[in-house]
Image (cartoon, rainbow, N blue to C red; front, side, top):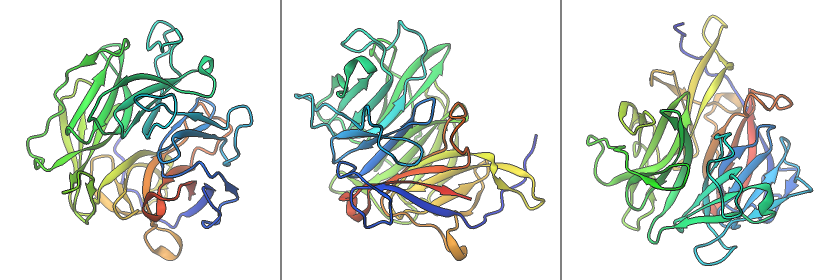
Length: 338
């Protein structure tokens, strides 16, 4: 079915949790610092990579801490704590024989970090994620999972090497192409996410200091299949600004000019905090509006994610976000509603 373009309308930003109370958030968690990656359990429990807090914080749909497990420590290369988590993903592989951690049980969640550490957590691990591997010099900034020829794989964006790294169910490295020669050599993959059955890779420009460079027009988004073969260029330059977050909006979030539900792809800019709206073919529609028709801007914007369909107690039209405002010195978790 061919959909018409979505029509932009005002949305509302609701801040739920911050590391202080400066953002109008009802909940304060001092350990939520530079809230980066976001993943959901099947029931809608949010797991957030607190990069500068060295933990994954855990909240319900309204930002309440989970009493039984308020946070999980992320390991560094040489210790069970002190990690620098960025990307995170729920393990989609339901096989009990795959993705075993060192405690002999399959991982429930995975994490990657700026320190080159890949880790995983399952209930048997308690309040500590377990290190899987550590690669000296790697700077992992994004993580996802996808199925290829019936098998599940982990995919991570290594901003330092400029490559997408892939691991199989036994955590063996797998070489896949993930190459677009049309992207300038001073760009690197900043994030990778499974969206609508395809892998979206957000590219940011590498600055002189090795970090992402901010600026309007500095960004690319490519679509790959699970074998790492380029399918198409989704977006280039224009309104992109160190893009990181991406989400497929459900049909019920936007309507077209006739009032009919229509899907859209949302891509968030870390560089300036704006959220770009595209139709599913990659046509730019505009930027998500806040109150009074002005573009919504979330400083230090990282993840964008709608709750999974299995989370039946969570409003499917809540677009959850994470952010590291104040130059990544603070942390913020909330949602956007229509």
